[in-house]
Image (cartoon, rainbow, N blue to C red; front, side, top):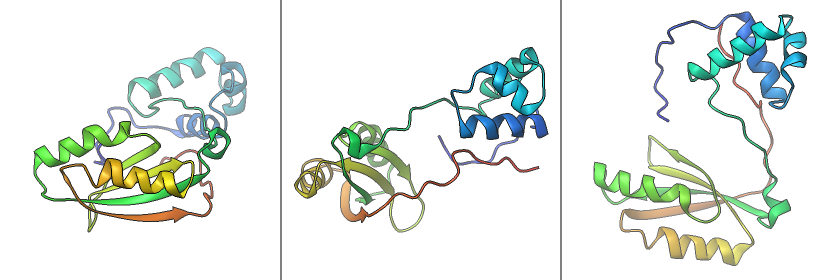
Length: 163
């Protein structure tokens, strides 16, 4: 999804902010507990959450999986530069990158690199194979740069909406 600020039809208020914060801490919180946490009736809470979803403010709920626990202990950030900045080359890479094995996230960037891939792999050989087999062979890719991740330090699990 593009990172373009767009005006919302209905501004969010302090109750919406409290709901977002509570769901950011625990997206599995039952509606009754969420309503109690933010100080509103359960029916109102349910309507508020649905409204946040319909307006695209809450985009989804996900399980946070530890890559090491599923056999992907080595993580890396791989910067990718494309050969040309045409729509065709961008779309070619953009459409294939998320489905490559081990890709955890893809970011389309401004600046010296065009894309940044967060990958999880089994080890150094798997990382080398990923770069050689999937990136350097892609016709749109001109250059890659790989940085190993020593530790991922969690930040906020939610964005604090501005007032």
